Image 1 (spheres, helix red, strand yellow):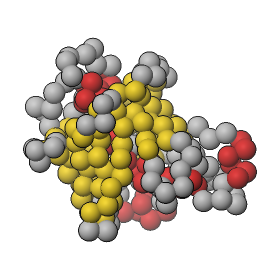
Image 2: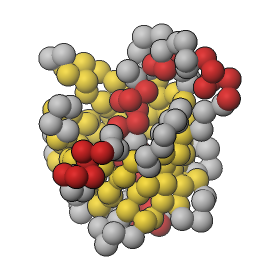
Image 3: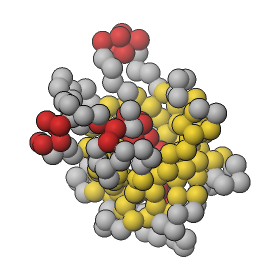
Image 4: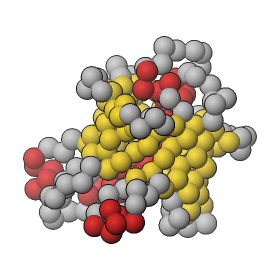
Length: 200
């Protein structure tokens, strides 16, 4: 895929994702910061009212979901969408115009979840694999070349003792091509915690 005009949000190579803590949480919401500690956007899951009611009785793993990645002007720069699912899920990655640019496929390797990020043609452009317990992942391309990492960054023992909020860091290698595939890889990586939660 050729070069594209990347939204400013995706020109970053270091993302810090911080879950917003809510008392009655039916949807996921995260703030996204750059390496200077400046907030550059949000990730918000929108849940219809009738879904909230049904989620009291049915497993959320079967429900469709949409995760919107927005910049600080509240402009959607990418979205992650999944339809109703009863076994394996097909997840789409859309750009800010709502055009499909990729997808996320969940695989299993040695009983561990493994995620493939694909381009718009269904070809694997990256894999997210690693240890879910230690929350330490590598992002590699189809030739096993490193594209980035995902790891936990704790913000102080006391704060973590009183909240269940998730914080993690997504780092993209400097030589990762600055094209539409980077949008798909970053969008998939920074929402992987939410995708994993919705699959449970």
